[in-house]
Image (cartoon, rainbow, N blue to C red; front, side, top):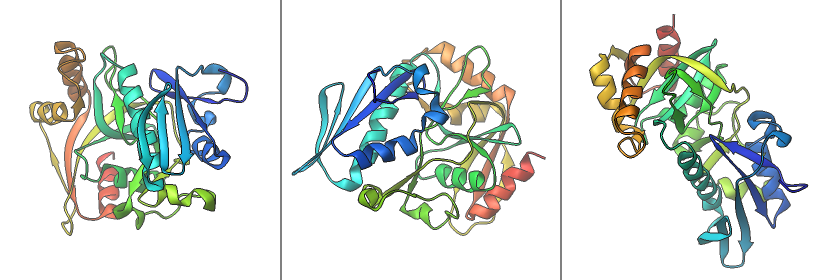
Length: 275
C-alpha cells in the first residue's frame, strides 16, 4: 500500500479506491471506514478501483481495466459496490456465501435471508436503528468448521427509495457535492458493527404490504432448501462440502419465516423471537 492510499477489507481480499475527486474519496472513506474494517497498517490493497469523472460520464476501472463507462452520477456508487461484492465473492471461493443480511442483537446473531425485494435491507435498517450491531446486508459467509460463527462483511447498508421513509437516524450525511451519487440508492454506514457473531436465529423475510406480522416455524429440511436457493455458486464453490455446511448451519440455528407488512411489527417480532 503506497503512502496516502487507504486500503479496505472485503471478506478475504482488500481494495483501494482512486479518484480525481477528493470529495468522492472522502465519501468512500466514510462508508468503508478503516476503524470498522481494520487499521490501514493491517491491510494491503490487492485490488485498485478507479472512479474517474469524465465529461461523458463516470469511468469505473478495476485493476487497470475499464469495467463501465459513461455512467450517470446516480449509478457510480452502485457500480462501485457491485465491483467490491464481486471481488469479495471471488476471494471467498469454497465457502458458502448466503445472499442475506446479518445483525447481532444483545450478542445473538440473526441472519435475515430472502431474495431481492423481500425486505432484508429495510429490516436491517430498522433493527440497527433499534440498537442492533451490523455485520452485513449483502453477503453472509459460512465456515465449514463452525457454521454458525459469522464473519462480518461490513459494506455500507444499501437502501433503495422505498426504504428511505423508514430511516430515522441512519441517512446519508455527506457533502452536498456528492449528493447526486445517492439520488437513487442511499449508502449508509451503520453506527455499531462487530467483526463476528454466533448466529442463533435464521429468519426468512417475506414482506407483503399491509399484512399483519406472522411468524411460523420452518423445519430443517425446508430451511435447507430455501437457504440453498439463496446461496451464491453453491455447486461450483465446494459442492457437497458447501451443502453439508449449509445443513450444519440449519441444524445449529432456529429457523422461522416472518411475513409482515410493517417494519415496526417485523422488528418487534424478531426481538420477541429471541426471548
